[in-house]
Amino acid sequence: MSGREPLLLAIESSCDETGVALVAGGRRIVAQAVASQIALHAPAGGIVPELAARAHLRWIVPALREVLDTGGLTLPQVDGIAVTAGPGLAGSLLVGIAFAKTLAWAHRLPLVGVNHLEGHLYAAWLLGRDEPERPAPPFPLVALVVSGGHTFLVEMRDHLSYRLLGETVDDAAGEAFDKAGRLLGLGYPGGPAIATAAVGARRRDTVLPRAWLGGSYDFSFSGLKTALRRLVEAELAAAARPPTESGGRLDPPRVAELAWGFQEAVVDVLSTKTLRAADDTAAQAIVLGGGVASNRALRERIAAGAAARGLPVFIPPPDLCTDNGAMIGAAGWQRFLAGERAGSDLGARPAWPLVRPFGTPDTRRPPRRGPAARAYEAALAAERDAAGDVPVAPVRGSAP
Ligand code: KG4
Ligand code: ZN
Image (cartoon, rainbow, N blue to C red):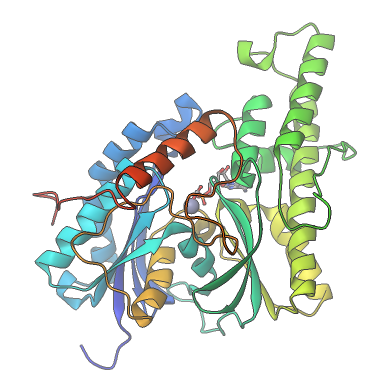
């Protein structure tokens, strides 16, 4: 086909959403499908890796079929394939990678492996199927990525170029929302549940601690989580109710007030540091990405601060903030333009960082505790053992 923009097939399976999309010219979403596993993992209150990988296997072919049908396209009309290669759950990543490699091999298409976090960043470049053209974010810009597993602030002076300004030293913002959601007895995932509960708060005077960490751009949410835990425990005890772990719950109006106070503290720190970074780096725009960027309070606070500075702000619509295939198409396009190509040895990189502070070794990790720390350690160990790659062979029978 001539006279049309190159078309990428993009595949995302790093966590708990199977995302497939067709993206034209790196920006225009031609068609997309996201098979969400939220209902599957909700009873466990968190993602169960083995279940996630199996669900990706179950849904990846139907998702591709739906996208091709909606777009009225066939695989021979596709010009290249982009797939998430990390970071994420090893088993889940391998499903998408093996699928993408098989399709690339069968249809003789070029392939590129994409960093999931770069995908969250480049979601801000995407245009909906019927959305009017609009300019892309101008450089230099500052971008805040806030997802379930990562929280960091970077300066971008050009495409694919990142200077790390700050990152979380403990929990990711989404992880903090999820833990707070559990503490308050709200559903999984905690982020949307807290945002919904907060809307109903009648009293809006709960002040929870903010970790400013001096003048740095780093973030910390574990103190906030502990403060919330202490408050909930004390109030449950005062009401002679059992602790949260034993099913004790505060009354819904109080839960709403605490949800509001928690959200307020997270949003205050995220927005204040992002806006200060924009000032300090003379940014021309602010970009937001990752699941937590679908939080309305955060979007409004950043938009207001940006407007006061006369800066354009680029925040994807909520369904493009959470995991999806289209964002991998947007980032993959930039990687293709830069001349990158993956071979049949493309492997999963469960702990692949997008950017590191200058001079730090590959294996640097922020100090973390608990199950997240153990999962992170295991992923790092897997990456070290495999010298950076978990090799995968194409799976037979998964190509449509
Ligand atoms: O980016 P994402 O879909 O997956 C990862 O790459 O981690 O982010 C998921 C995270 C979850 O922690 C979820 O609680 C959070 O994003 N999240 C929100 C909202 N929607 C999703 N957090 C706050 N407010 C929301 N509206
Ligand atoms: Zn994500």
